[in-house]
Length: 247
Length: 307
Image (cartoon, rainbow over all chains, first blue to last red):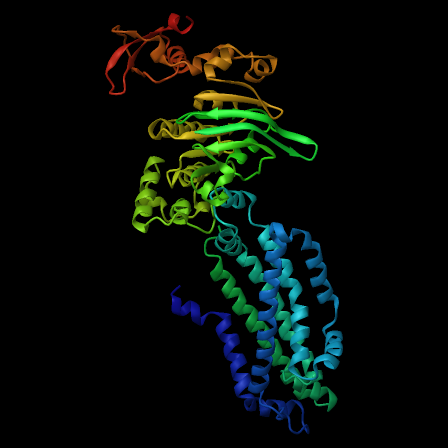
């Protein structure tokens, strides 16, 4: 198969096109929605553009996931080094607490402290997204074969050289898998942020529920689902690209 | 080259190495031989400071190992282990280049050295340079592992049961190669094994260890002929002692110069065990012997084996 044909046959491309079309040309759906929901007017959410909602949600997810990735991986590195080994159970426990706390509860606690809008949402996404990243990064770093670690140390690589030349590259696929899970969860969870005033694709869902307008709910839900699926597919691509040498 | 002086190491109550002293001269291939838990690996790893000593001192090349930073020390000591530990995400070339690059050699020099080492281990550079470890057989991986340990031309090579995990045929080939490399480079090698046959074959000097101490230190022949106590006698094994003796003696010791015999000649460096094997297989009590240039220079005869 040629490179071009493989590209055309790739589901990422088609899901991406579908998502972009729905996002930018939602109007095209108007006749279909009119027929499905006669009498509902407006049939397409119009308080914000879907593009603006998507970009706002993307921003929230990127900021929260980036912070969770950096801090999660740093935490995992720390607890897998000799100096931090004692903190390993504590780090897992903390990340688990972050996960068991429902994001809605985090929002409820965060709003009085930081106010309405994007900030409580980012905090909730960050805490919620930390666990899969820490867990996977620890598993990845601990999964580096004993012999490889011993050889690296025995040949005189410094602690820093061992970390960035050996441990992190070898753990990268597992770490990335954790980030993938975390980001996918964050995209879904971010919609709840709309209840505290963050702009996301969840906004039409909640407005639709409040105003009893089913088309809004469907529009928001379909776009969020496509957003999450597309992101997941892109991560799958990245993972494949990261392990060219695995046997 | 290596002076280990009254070194001890304990884990909790268990004394793994007990006031051990050992001096290894330049160019020796010293085998630390013993059953598992005797402290041989711990001793080896204390030389490059992978394990810190509790007491006593170790000098390499006259310098106390604790006086230099651990990383600098390890970069001048080659290290090869049973699990090999090749970096799976690096090519053969990059794996071998590890220490030279740490030492900031020029890329051209690194490249030349990689080619040289691959040839030394009979791995065609053009085929193997760009391969990844998982594309190699176990024997090839271990060759690359040893090549990597030798890459920066270290003064000392430490080997921890490097051939224990490969099949017998590959092990035989690797042992022959190591013997050859030891002879041609004259490196000081410390080699840990529990395999008496391997020790007899490779060592210039064997240190038999038990419970953290050296029970006997001597040449392979010494140890076979004059075991100091029952432990050593037990360890080297009464059974097959004669054959082991034949395996450590060379044809050159028993050569009848100037005589001639029919057949394919044996090498002067071959062991008497190989001579006996060839005689048995060819049903003859006399075989010709040739020197390194392939000239027939004499004969080895059956009665001489048992002299």
